[in-house]
Image (cartoon, rainbow, N blue to C red; front, side, top):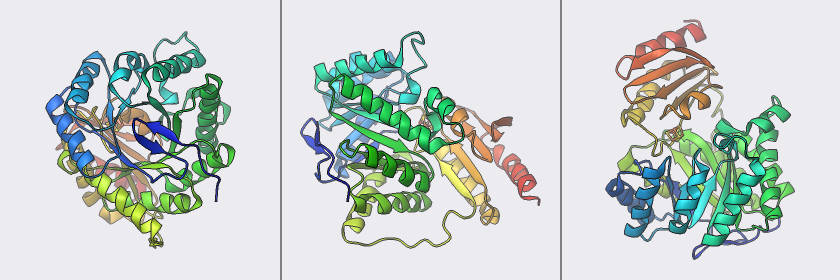
Length: 371
Ligand code: SF4
């Protein structure tokens, strides 16, 4: 059993230090669509979410989030995506700020990362926000990828540790860390190593892009069941690809997994992960076409004939993160407003309309498996 992490406060919610593990989720509505976002925040809270994350990309989203704040009492986390300077405007209206260390280099390129983190810590301190340092396999900070070539797990852990040291140096302690990957085994490896080196820091656990049901829940369980019984994990998210009206099911699954682990009910999934692996993002405010979820479901149905093949197909919901997050997959699809781009590893095969892409995907899959 690892020693207890320290307690941090998100408004009136305690995370860490052995407190009950809150389940959280993220809105997949367009943040500027205030009615839809408020409705989803409330639906997630009603399902039992301790925290609800909302992403902002620009000043319009930031303004909308202020109004969302006015209309709901839920504890809100703002996801700064690539636009960390927006923290200043939105921090007074939320309870927690999530920044991704891998996205800090996009803006104000001449400002050192240390200065950017110092600024975020100062903003959070003034406004009483907690922070999540959210490291993600699809967007690891370039300097860590360069420092640990071919060792993504090490790059994720070292990036997280570096940011803990920075925040500590600025005397900011109200933070949690997440180390996410789409591979449950890597999630276990990253979080075990991080917890060994920083047992004091509360951890937000998640398997990113876990995908469609039921595989998304199985992948998540495989990681959580190995970590939570060791005392690793202070808050969780189950990242599922679900249509908007069903987003609340992430919370239901999170609660069910925690309940099962507490009662010693673990899954047995022999052979799981040995064949075709379909990963898909949980969507967020950046999804530009609701058909993304339907496409992911169709890909799963269409590729069933190849289920024994050791290949990865990735389906991502936007053109911002989609291109980068499909690079490692054997076949990747990233979805724009009216077309879907098909890739083989980092090479783009072409862009196709939503109703034309499946036969092209099948042709490429057949070539890969030698049909
Ligand atoms: S890939 Fe795009 S739409 Fe999907 S969760 Fe990431 S940022 Fe959001």
